[in-house]
Figure 1 (cartoon, one colour):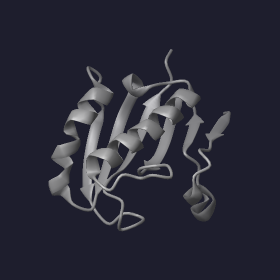
Figure 2: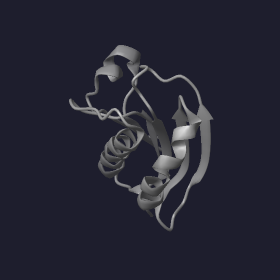
Figure 3: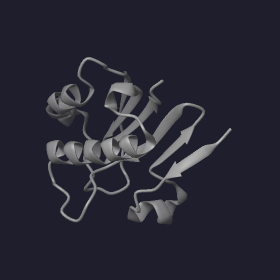
Figure 4: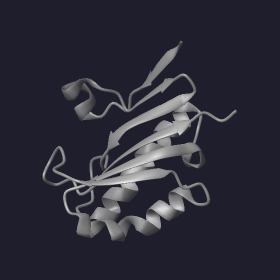
Length: 124
């Protein structure tokens, strides 16, 4: 079985020892993703949008897209903020909603408002 690793070059990949995504056996596993970039928004909607953009890039590089996501996990330090993200999630997944889990927990930094992890399949 061939395994392909996709790196975004993010600072935590080297610090923690992981990669943005792994393609294996017809699946794409995208690591938990928080907002990315030099100018990270402080609000959950901006952070959710940034995380979805980074996930979309990883999915594209792997050869798939949001329509092929079969599982998503959301992690938030404050569950009360999650509803603000719903329109973005409906836009991302559209008519192809994945199975989902939401967990309230601490994230890697106190500034992070949401982390999103997905599993997708490669198109046939």
